[in-house]
Length: 82
Image (cartoon, rainbow, N blue to C red; front, side, top):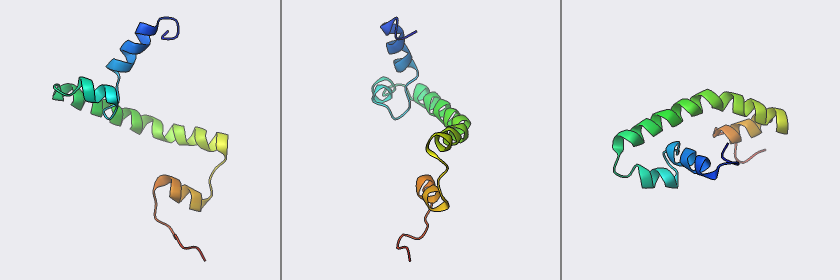
């Protein structure tokens, strides 16, 4: 819809801004309740889509080995190798 009617895309970008986006910093500066609601919305979205997103990434790019998976997920692991 936003491709055909650009104001709709702009409205969606403004209304659904992620809490750490430039839009959110500008729009939520004086509205802490709205900022908190955006943070909750982002947490729910991330919790819902993080698993399926990784599965699609693994399907497209190939499932990583254990060492690559630890690096991707922020795990420690052996940095020096052997």
